[in-house]
View 1 (cartoon, each protein chain N blue to C red):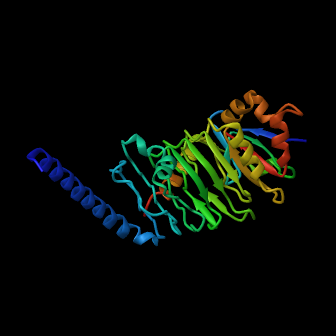
View 2 (view 1 turned 45 degrees about the vertical axis):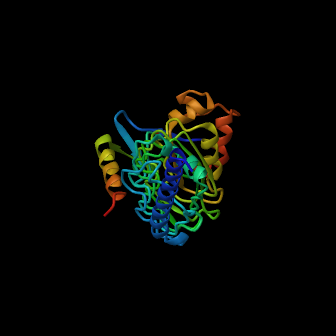
View 3 (view 1 turned 90 degrees about the vertical axis):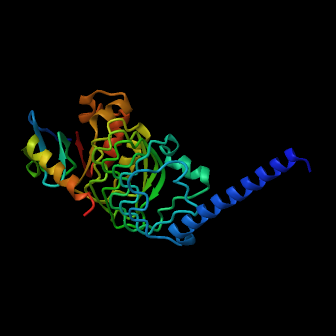
Length: 247
Length: 56
């Protein structure tokens, strides 16, 4: 082997050792942090700043049973993390909330913009879930319990940029308030109204008049007093057992 | 018949739990269920809600 080949061989050996070291470092951290995939308490797990594409690389599927403040003020200047759903998909990591019983302020103040499915069916109450999520744009799906028994409080306060959120399940209590979501699209608004329980009485849902007017191509006045037979009229009056509060 | 109530300028309507500018009442719900509060009072309620979601 001549000198040049020896140098190249040494370089390759070094790179292999370096990469092995980095992999070991990665494994050591995430095996510990995620308890070899068994971690279920994710309270504050990804809260606060400093995350970027090199540091936010979970190794195992994320399956919280408790996700309080999990992404609270999750801040980054790395645009690869803005789409949290895509980022996790690219890592082959699932974020599975289906067993989660505590969601308090999970995404509050987070800098991520797009998230996937948030399955809340194991939680009896949801508080502050997307509150002050000023960067949030889309939630692929918000799944609620089918029995309408969940209570809601302050889940969307000031989350002004959310434009898409499909709701499944049943809204059976007061407190579902999306007044700040002024650009919410038609499919999302429709899903919210469709999710309203048909068996309750005296409950209120709060919606953005601006969002409805834009989504359904009607005037502000027509949101409040829709033209008989119009699309919004049919949707609103599919739930005459509900009070609609418009902001 | 649908009953709509609208808050006065600068005011909000509330039933003590829900808040809005215009209320389209459900069947069987009385207008008397709602009363007006000032914008300042509503702002205070929002501040309380904000404090409630912060970490302890």
